[in-house]
Amino acid sequence: MAEPSSSAPPRDTTTAPSRPGESRGRHAWLIAALIVTFMMVNYADKSVLGLAAVPIMDELGISNSTYGLISSSFALLFSLSGLIVGFVSARISSRVLLLAMAVLWAVAQLPVLFVASVPSLVAGRVLLGAAEGPAASMSMHALYKWFPADRRGLPSALQIGGAALGTLVAAPVVTGLITAFGWRSAFLVLAMVSLVWALVWWRVGHDGPYGETRTAASAVGGRRLPYRRLLLNGTVLGSIAGAFGASWAMGLSHAWLPAYLRNELGMTPGGAATLISTVSAFSLVLLLSVPPLLDALRRRGVSGRWATGVPQGVAVAVAALAMTALPFVEARGAHLVLLTVAFGGHAIVFPLHYMTASAVVPPLQRGAVFGIVAATGTLPGLLAPYVTGRLLDSAASESAGYGHAYLLSGAVMLVCGLIALLVIRPERDARRLGPAAGRPDGDAGPPDDGSREPNADTDTGRPDAGARGPGADPGPGCAGPGSQADGSKPLAQ
Image (tube, rainbow, N blue to C red; front, side, top):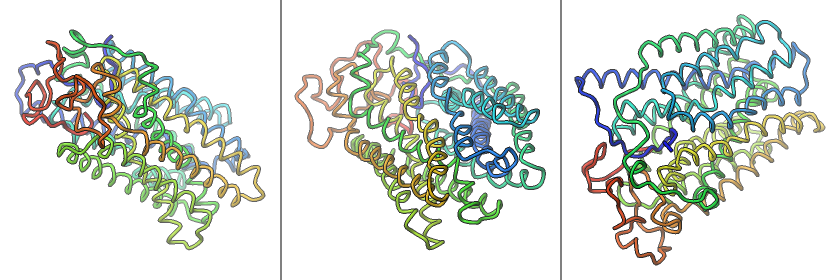
């Protein structure tokens, strides 16, 4: 079976067609710019309901619980659609998939323009969630078709950073539209932006010259492992836990942070938008600085546990502690700093949790496992908004309700961070799974903290050393197609 798209695809083995390199390079960066814009629109669409929460709740007279239910409905089909589209992506062009998503985003914003009611809001959010579920993985898949394996680090970071950039830009712009023209205007403008992006993409967004996800290894020598073994090993479970904790903070942020800033902290719409942009800017700085640094450490021989696993656990745990401290800190400046860390400090988990999971999954099964990891890790988008609304309605006061929500969120995130910190050990789990277990670009890395187990195939520190078939990926030091001469791997491989 062809491997669905992922943030860590196997090494390309196809050769780019004959085209002028300079012209192709310019078009590759045009594609990268369009995909960054795609992710910006994606996150602006996610944010619009939260930014318009106060006027919507006032106009429609809905309770906190009902609003939480509306917000949670976004995640109803989000994970399922991401999983399904991941499996079919090998048969449908990335150009068509991204076009269809953008058009559906526009359609999803329209119901409230005709009938402003709870059912129309729910219908729009369910459709939007279904259309946005595959957005991150499919846009990364399209991006990789334009860059060889040793030139994907910066484009990958930019694609991931587009999410934070989208919230950073959307907060002041959407808030300005709501203040000046009413909350419906924000939905209308975002629908128009999605359609414009779709038209431009259809014109210039054809698939690039660098290979599909099928590789020589999958065609000749690929092997499979039982999914039960793959999903129940510590590295995959830890990756899911890290994603779950980070997504809990994200779901809470999109649904309730704007309302909290206005109703509890007394901020103006513009002031709330500025703080939300600050949180997004903090996330963007982390996304563009920490993963490249960790990638450099990995090339220097640092184990996968310390280069990718521990940072995930620490990021979620630190954000959890900041979240837990919020109800007890009244000083304005310190409170705002804690908000920034609680809702922005977890950002690096999203590019890293796919990297750790990919380290123990055979190439043929990466796409399916990534879909399962993403589907499980994004469940908080369904839970956090509704649970928070219930806590607000059941508490003695709204302030107390927010306090309870932050304490619960901090506890969930802290548990997830500790699990990721303790159980993500890619090298150890790859050895336990045996030679069939895959690593990005065949790079096994160094032994894991002295926990090396006897294995006849690990004399060189690689789980499949001496067992390469004719179609296997070249290892470090073997300059195969799309590889670097020194065998190092780029970010997000």
